[in-house]
Image (cartoon, rainbow, N blue to C red):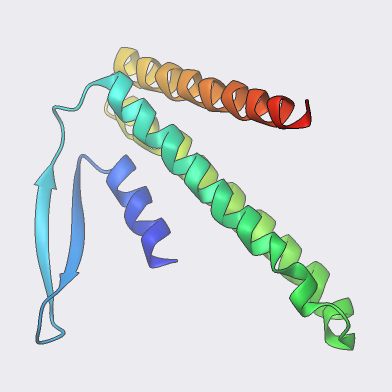
Length: 139
């Protein structure tokens, strides 16, 4: 989960913080500025982060049969699914809308909508690519 929040922080904040563990198990903080990234590349990073996050969720769902057959799953299964749904909606919204929202808040409307357009464009590219891969594997 720490990886997901680090990715979200990278894609949203004007400067991001990566925590790196050194030999003494103390964290050192490296500040990296990336204000100079172009909107197409930042949109690519955001869409890629969303695809990777969705891939992690799909992998989690493939582990579902490991939990079946127990009585606790009948009660806790829907609770876990709904909590995962809400958490996933928040993470996905932050990945797609976070940086554009910060730009919009700072009254950089044109940059915000440009970034959002590039992110949606790259998302559409991934969607079409995955659909073509699925169709190709069916033939």
